[in-house]
Image (cartoon, rainbow, N blue to C red; front, side, top):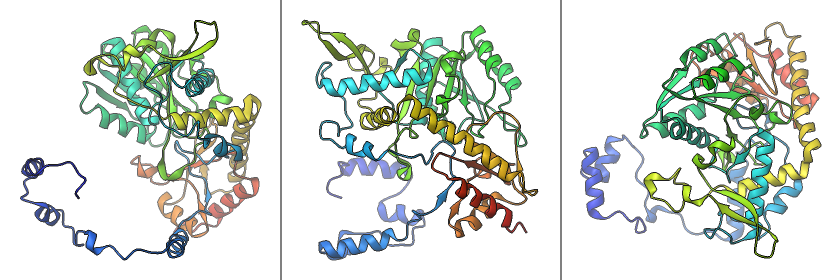
Length: 448
């Protein structure tokens, strides 16, 4: 590995830390039975036609034709055909914002328009230029609350995405943050609102709630956010942006911050990334917000101009005093979200959300005719339902995959005691015929 910058002394120090003499002993301790690959073991080069044939053969192993009802934070939404053509223009095709505050006016304007769209969606006053993904946005929101309140306790509901909670714990390991999770009983879908209220004290920096929550439920968080406000703790909403086309925005629900994963806004699932984290806050927290902010002003000639503003928070300050150390952002992904929203327009975006909700209601109606399947929860839902199955959800998923259907997410993967529960997501892409197919697969499943 000639291009890895580790020196012999670097490697010796790392081997000493793990108690090994060299790579061979490290592989032996790791019980790796396969030989370590070497450059000499690589096959001979291929011609272009041979390489194309190889990749075509490999691609046939993909399950690209699966009928997908997977959700849990990442969704199979329709992407307008024009979107990729627009974002692939050479003027746009970069992930970076300029370092000079006034350079590249076109890029700065797209960031400003993206921020405006996020503010409009969330009902907040200020948004940043983007974050890496939804999980990092949750962590950055926790850090912001610590800076604002000078407290370190973070209360988070177990009905927040397990991925986001895991990322919060990982990122917080080297920070002075104490994470306290409030569990949700295995037979419930709604957050334990009473326990959340009781958990908030004068030591609490923030309470983190998901809206709608991971199980698809839409709780009324009014009492929880009121308790947080009374003790000067911040309320953080983790949002599904498509749902906000129909739901009351968090800015109108007493939340101080709105964060989330913007993958549903035109980004393909793409095996897990790249994705896009968003953050919007009330104006009073603007100077404590991480990431870059594009602002609009006028130049000496009175013309509209765009600029990276409040840079002293990030670029022109000692590293240890910065709001974060994010040197770039997901600008291309943010542009994708902006183009997606612009192509759809307000009415089109609301139509997408309405289709998600109405098709989910149709699924509930179909499942009502299957006595073995129980749809949990009686409250309001957007586009996800939690089903109680007669047998293990993981086993049913394997059966359904054999029939070309990914029926949902087995909740037992993340929540002990929910091994028979399946989280099913319905987007506007699913037709009524496909929803009926899922219902038939459930009806015909072998539960023994």
